[in-house]
Length: 116
Length: 110
Image (cartoon, rainbow over all chains, first blue to last red):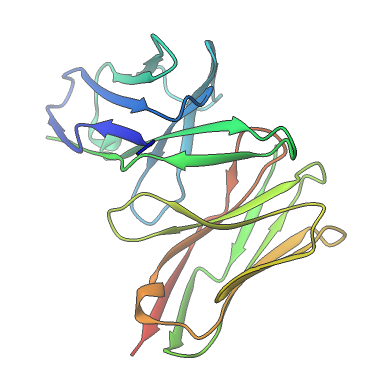
């Protein structure tokens, strides 16, 4: 089945120790997103790729970076995780609908990051 | 940028009753309004969406209405069941980025 896959589902890292989260998709969507979601809050967009074009949200900390080596894969790098970075990280994909110009977003299962 | 407000933040209903969640948006260019349901520890799942050329859309027990003039849209769940208990997020979009509301925690009492 076509889908958005995230690995690992649970990640524990130490304060200040770099960590990488991965996302892959079989949907062949050209837009990929990374969201941060903390308990009881809405997903917060960190950045997205439109094809190879990287777009950073203005309030995304420099501590967060992303790579998209090809259409199928996208990575989230947290260079020096702090306790406040503990959250669920959601990857999503979308593709423009030619008939409506809207973008339905499909979310992966998320990676729960714990920082000790 | 777009600002989406969602009310109420929590909603408790008796099983079988209806639930209504309301959202307002600020950007008149927004033309796509999805609703996501998120169960604890799981991904947001798209349950219904509406585009600006439509005033109402229904899918079984779920319906969404849109008032472009007033810039608000609503989710209606009829005949609620325990499995409807979850957090519901509305969102608005004029391009490929979504602006989410803060979410509504719905609890269906048996």
